[in-house]
Length: 77
Image (cartoon, rainbow, N blue to C red):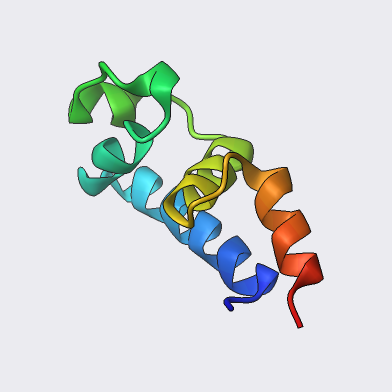
């Protein structure tokens, strides 16, 4: 299982991609239901707080949200 530190690094990488204007962020942001209807350009125009990046990473890993991912990572050997 991937460690929590790896998930944190993924979230920070997502923030860097957003700041750099990487359009792939739009597809990742649309994984969250509240952003489902955004275009890639609209996704890049929105501010991206760390909490949103963490939520995206958690959903990509198969968890409902960041706290669920943290709990699973804490329970992992």
